[in-house]
Image (cartoon, rainbow, N blue to C red):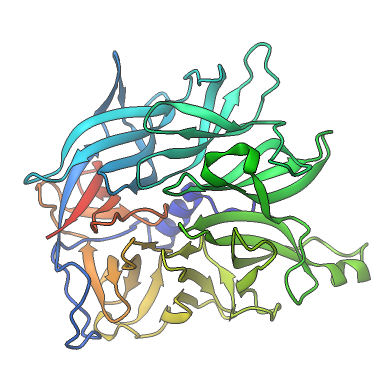
Length: 452
């Protein structure tokens, strides 16, 4: 899969700034760019630890002691927080917390291991590991799960599973299943997944013709969680509009409730390959494209490398693109001289090397961000005068929410770093933020930020 994975993103982004991911302050200040306009950004946040490494998740008669957060953390408006982690025995899983935000501080009402390595699934298969996963606003989870090969089963690879209303994961598509009415079958190798409120699912999977012949990767749409209605949206071999470039692989995806989507993909030139097939090495050019699941074949190109000229922006995309509820796209890309550009709603709002946020000094870098249901943009920023910060922006104003050295509302050691941006749903409809904080005393916690 053409996929800078979430774990790889966290490693690369942390390394790029000396291992410090993010820093924090409780009451943010504007940068002055908003003038007298009333901002939609909350005036400030209170931050609390919810679960820390060393804490236990109680799973029936057993308990699972958290030893490592993988970095994906998502929050639904009903107070359900979903994250992945492992214990000291390297046993991993996906977990959920039901959090009550009505009191003076967050209170966990219930907790569960949605799935653990070694669990038996509803179809009798044994979980080997979990892959990409996503939640909708009801807290339902769509996940790629690799199931071990139990005696008598032909299934050996990845499957797409749905956990509906916390009733356990049921299989939607597993190895060798037909992908809807298409003449394609799942090969058991899957990539990213995205789920929405009506249980519409977008996912990336390898496919074949049912006889072991691998055709490549494709984006499939599974409306309402119904496997029989699965359709192909974009696949390897498709030709990009007004070009001779064809899709070779597909990476991270994002979709909104209207069916609009963005996707990270790679392409190759058919002309160059045909001209010198013996010398042609299949060099992939990364790009970001967009479309709608209801308009098959209508694909727009948002960003691609400078050597390709059929896009809105010239550059190599960084990590996964995002799409807002109203269809606005968010991408981060590097131009031909290595400067990063941050594009939202077809506007370049930030650029490395610039002083576009004058109060914060020269901009050094930024992360991919997360778009809240109300359209507020949350992202990480590295600037001369601030270090690495968590920001919120309504495009008229960019405000610091968190900066290193701050003590959270529940006390304890100051924040040293924060992991944010590995998931698309870090923020819920109430403006609550879910993230991972690392502290100066060596502790690590899942943290929620609550507007005040």
